[in-house]
Image 1 (cartoon, rainbow, N blue to C red):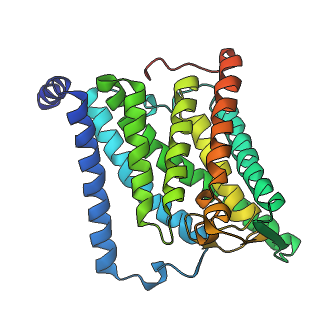
Image 2 (cartoon, rainbow, N blue to C red; image 1 turned 30 degrees about the horizontal axis):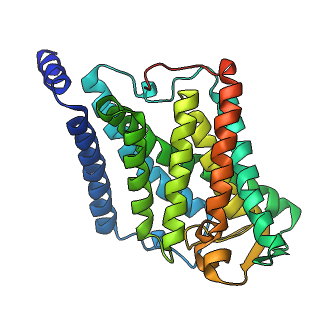
Length: 299
């Protein structure tokens, strides 16, 4: 106990930037340990396929969520806080999650409608039978929610909140969104426009966090966007196609407008949609602030 008290006092004396760096080092260390262990186990069934299945993606997200949770828990334990205090303690979690999920689906669907109307995409029914379609729908929904939870907690949980204490919310949002976009450089067939769109989505998610003081709306939006891309429309997601989609989307026309193999987020039209989405989020969450549980720990 005495050591923990000394550690808390020492950590409290550190600038928020150093604490954020400590969190990043912990996440990187835990991920590296997982990679080392998996390499030793040589699990060939974990190698990525031409099309990613919901089960494979879910397993990978769980392997990413574990280091994020562990690092968040370590920092929370030292600071004498709960992991839930990093944006997960809302009493309106289900309502926020559902609202974000709906807006995420609508936003990506609007982008797909623009691509279709402009002759930049063609949709085809995938031919899924009803029983299989229901199974894939539920599997991809669960996977998308897990993706949203993992990535929002990683970038807009402890990291965003701690950096905001030192430099202000929006400079921190800029930094975490840049990191969010930069990590997408490692995705196959990613493009410059795609990275810019990922950065834009990151800023929208930070806006939602600032408005609701909760991670649940951003988690829902993130999940809704990915669910629409992967299951509803069967489009490429950061250059990767997914198995078991409801529709098959074939991009046509110039890559900078259609997104080509990058997917819808590789289209310049995505920038327009994101701007409209940011305005909508600003107005919607502003006009309904009273329905949200405001966790004042996020500044």
